[in-house]
Length: 149
Image (tube, rainbow, N blue to C red; front, side, top):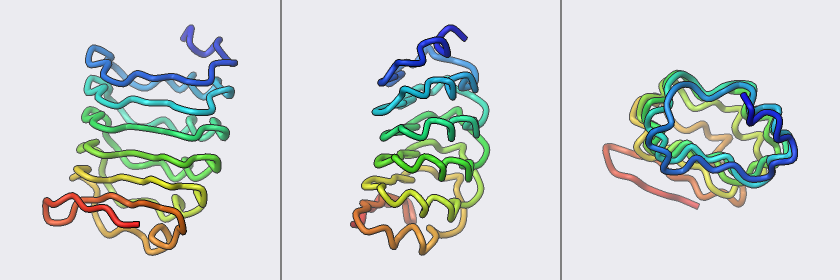
C-alpha cells in the first residue's frame, strides 16, 4: 500500500472510519516511525485477523482495536514484542477468540489494557498480566465491565 512508504509517520488514526473495510494491511509494519498511536477504534468494517507483522512497530505506545467488531481470530502472541506499548485496547472487539496470551505480561510498561466487551475471549486473565505494576486492567465478568488497578 502507499501508506507503507510513509516510514517517518508517527501517528496513524483510523478512529471512526466506519467505511474502512477489508483486512489490516501487513505493510503497516513498515511504518517503523510510528510511535504514538495506531488506532482502528470503531473501524467495524475491518475483517480478518490482527497481523502478527505489527510486532515490528517496537516504538509504538498505543494500539487500539476498540469496537473493531469485524476482526476475528486470536490475539497474536507476537504483540509482546511491542515493548514500548503503554496502551492496548481490545474493548468491544467481540469476534476475537481464544485465550488471552500470557506473553502480554512482557509488556511491562502497560498502563491500560482492556478486554471489556470482547465476548469471544475465553478463560481467565493470566495472573502474570495482573501482576503488572502500573496497569489498569478492564474486562467483562458475567456481562459487567470492570476495571482494576
